[in-house]
Amino acid sequence: MTAVWAGIDAGKRAHHCVVIDGAGRVLLSRRVDNDEAALNELIEVVLGLAGAGEVVWATDLNAGGAALLIALLADRGQYLFYISGRIVHHAAATYRGAGKTDAKDARIIADQARMRTDLQPVRAADQISTDLRLLTARRTDLVFDRVRAINRLRATMLEYFPGLEAAFDYSKKAPLILVSGYQTPEAIRRLGASGLAAWLTSRGARNPKAVAAKAVEAAGAQRTVLLTQATGAQLVAQLAEQIMAIDVEVAKIDAQITERFTQHPDADILVSMPGFGTVLAATFLANTGGDLSAFETVDRLASVAGLAPAPRDSGRISGNHHRPRRFNRRLLRTCYLAALSSLKPSPASRTFYDRKRAEGKTHKQALIALARRRITTLWAMLRDRTLYQEPAPASTPSAA
Image (tube, rainbow, N blue to C red; front, side):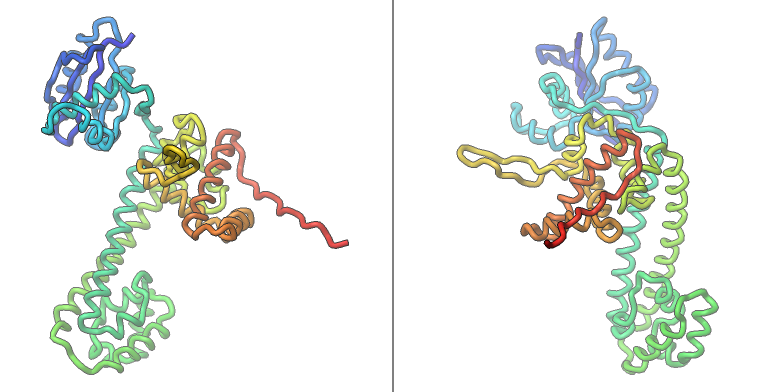
């Protein structure tokens, strides 16, 4: 029988713990450092308050600063529930007082754990999924850094050489190699098409002659030297080097992701489904913990992924649905991109998407509907340990 409820407002360097009994009375309120010895001492004190009864723990973080606490509680077989910060924020409005403190938040977390029966326990992911969560998060950061650097490069080049900015797609390697060495009209004209092509060839650029010809054409169209050229050219060269360095790091991360992903028992099943490459499948594992049984039903998984519409009925209004407000955005993005990628290799996905479009759905709505359908299929594949098999196309009756 549960004796006490412990709510923890988790932080980076310290947590605040409040323990209450069945009547909601505060038995303990303590700030504790995010340190193993201090957390172990706190756990012993709380267990002592419970006596022979059980302790129900709840926290507003399920990773990051609460990782050490979660691991220590798991080692002791303690029940730990997750209450999101959003829930705590809205619940605070129903409690007395307008102030906000860590102690008050911890008290609310404990009280919500005492009253609610729909909270989800914090489940530890397997080692491979944990590794993939860290690796895919790092890859996402690198991709964002790359996009920002490319946008900055193009904006800087517009300041002094708009013709060259418009000539190339700077997400490609060859244009980056070009502007890492030659960024101004004068420098490109001086080297000439043949010399520039030879220079690009020596550095492994693809289609060096075509790249050189376009660069020389852009240089020939601008004779004016702008005041921003000297500094802008230096910045463009630095940004090009930075982007190419990010590409190298992304390739290394991809190799690590592939190595860890292939060791997971669900790897072959996931990549057998059209649209799921190694990175997307690894991201799916990272955001589900590697075990779909934690979601109990496929509907629960779809809800967590933001693929199940939430009803908004009131009075005489019924059948009104809207997009859920609380869901795993990374999981939604993974399922959405996988659905988008499946349109070309999977006739069944294309047929379903076209049908939704014919019903008046927008491109985004049709893809979300497709992603929801694919989640059901993927759930069945993982449950039955079977690979994906493309459904046979529906036969059309021949004319008499």
